[in-house]
Image 1 (cartoon, rainbow, N blue to C red):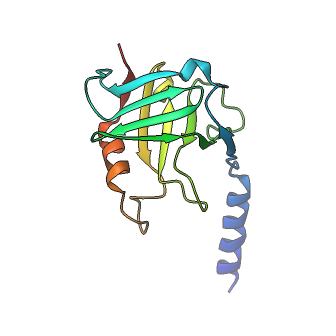
Image 2: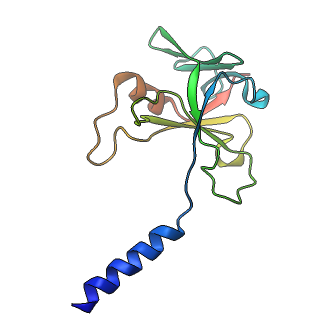
Length: 146
């Protein structure tokens, strides 16, 4: 009987040591001037999907449709308490506690590289990716347009 209790305490101890990730809701991207610009697969803005980051927020052009997002979540501590790199993380389509995709700017510590990966959608047990999100993930990685 002691083994399950010990295992439970060990699990609880390990979970309490994990860093908490905090996201804050923001409006627009004016506080992130180094991220502003146009992004496309391979940096070729003749290709889609295209993503535009400006002071007002984010714009997405997927299969000829345009969508704007002004309110989004900035994952301020996604890299951990002592992270000092250049990557920055955003959830553009969050609602009701679900965040279907994660956008990583300066991915792999490379300026001008943007990746879009599934977050709550498309993972084990979660709902499948929507067509828009599937296209955004498929176009990744993005580079700032030349």
